[in-house]
Amino acid sequence: MAENAFHQPLTGHAEFDRLIAEFADEPDADRAESIRCGIWDKFGVEGAVFISDMASFSSTSRKLGVCHFLKMIHRARQIIVPVIEANNGIMLKCDADNCYAFFESPDDAIKASFDVNATLFHANEEFGMGEQIYLSVGIDYGRVLLVGDVEFFGDPVNTASKLGEDLAVREEVLVTHRAIEHSKFVIPERAERMVARISEIKIKYVRLPMTEVIGDR
Image 1 (tube, one colour):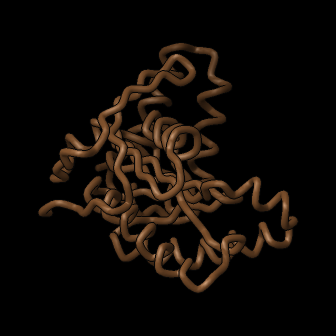
Image 2: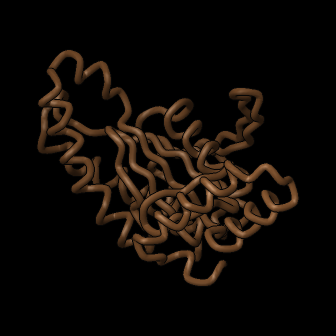
């Protein structure tokens, strides 16, 4: 892991923006490549990307209105953030009904996904159907540009987003093969092994219902 990349100060975001601007404006190919390598040296880390989406949420919000939409997002964040942090993750941001988190360990990311869904399952018992919250989660692993505790970029971010937002259904966790290969998680026999093509990207992943448990860590 790059030195101090996992816990950069907020000023790291300004430094990142400056370097990206230099990279974009540099006409010389060799100098541009040097800047690019410097960006990865300073901000590049390996870890697990966790992206969640509130399943079946748009249709419910259309029926009940924007204030209901905002109330549900607020409740969801209050539940999700402590679970992410309890599993050694960094909650980078919440954008509308999506949450984006980074973990050094894919095992922690997988466990956090089950813990979040389990917590929501019990919380939902106190509410009627229009007030219940369900998540779909996508998890991938690899090298990303981690900008402090604010933002991340990279192929694992794109893949986890496609899994969590486009493919997973409520109370479901989709984990890429490469994330599982870097973890101690044992794939349950009844888990579905899937392959998807989205935007010319081939994604191998495993479909896990929330009832599965993390293996020995």
